[in-house]
Amino acid sequence: MVSAMPPSSVRIVTDLAHGGRWTSLRAGDREWLWCRDEPRRADVRPGDAFADAGGIEECLPTVRGVPDHGDVWSRPWRREGGTECVDHPDFRLARRIGTGPGGAAVVDYRLNAAPGFRFLWAAHALLDLAEGARIVLPDGARGRLYPDGGANWSPFDWPHADPAPEQAWDVLGSDDGTAVGAIVEAGAVTVADGPDRLRFALDVAGQPAAVALWRNLRGFPEGAPYRSIGVEPMLGRVFDLAAAGERDAACVPAGGEVRWRLTVTHSRAV
Image (cartoon, rainbow, N blue to C red; front, side):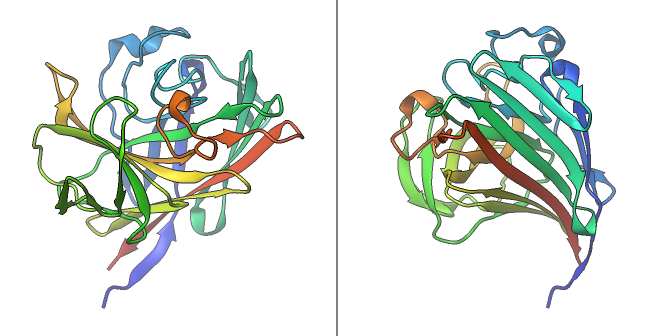
């Protein structure tokens, strides 16, 4: 029988000058974010190619497509009281980072835009996980497998994905030279790495919620591949807004505002 210790506090550090990027997510005496030295990251401007420095990037209004990883990661943010925010010609995104029960980190988001504005959002979290770590999602949850960087996908039921249904996605293996993305329809995901458990839970009303996954086992980028594991709570069910069907993207209602909450908790199995 596995029991659990009480949850520990989750601590977040962000860099407003550089796209509002989360540069640290600490819980259980460890750093959870994977980061890499990317000299282009410090000087990016809107429209630049994505500079993958790791951490957590806020991707909005798309993840893949144009602009790549959205249009807020490359813009400077600012602080207004206890709120961090960024302005775009088409929208305003604000977030407030607080503390919930048991030391959880609670991030409240607010998007203001014209009614009917469609968007995707993802907390593009790249995590520092050991070989053998597990991604815990509901068995049988509907998923979409993206075998390459395009918009084409095939359906699967978590954790087994065609064309190799014997290959389960829930356990992270050794580097095999592959890089594959997936989106699973679920409102929460837990990462189990050794005794540690990190959980992301998304609370939103009237919008599609999912978890995007990026399993890069030294298959990307071509010529200089590295290992990076993405576990990304998101609004929407596709990577590219341009490929979104009627129910695949979030949509701003008549009031001109969408609110959602991301809660990050940590616990340890004993």
